[in-house]
Image (cartoon, rainbow, N blue to C red; front, side):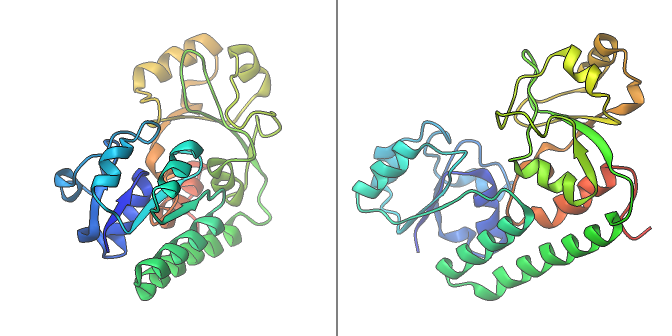
Length: 252
């Protein structure tokens, strides 16, 4: 099967399912696993794929994420007679279902079941750990200038919610709302997470935010954006990671 992936987490999933050799095209943002992915032809970005290039590769299947990729590109590929698999996981359970679905399409059901089982085991473990514990409040920043966060209708929120966290911006109307310094201070989060994706927050940004807000610098932490936003085979690692960020290793 000839596969094109237009989403980094889906590219990684194809490799984890044992079908990496079937990838004939990926985006410039598909960087995992390295170095295996480096020599696969690039077909542009997630938001601006080179449709002519994709068509020339004659794929049997194109993998897309409804948030990362554009509807108009999906429609154009469909008109070209190319089969698509689209998904939009918003929870670990959704991610597990997607992994199983893609595995079935690729004919590697057992590999998919192994990933699904690992995700479900981690979810059960973290849920049991969090049950009965007081909720910890958090804010997760994905962008700077302006600062942007996440609401309850996001995969990131679901990871921390499973681990007993409460998003201080959960009720915002926008999935990725802009937030002011004043709003961040007034919300009083116990944890402020600065992600490494899509904006690459660094320690100097954490120090800057501590000065702007007056929050205890110990509350502000740089976190792995891939583990917390790449939904797919990486979910099995993201679930316990979110729990660890809230203060304890599940099972302790």
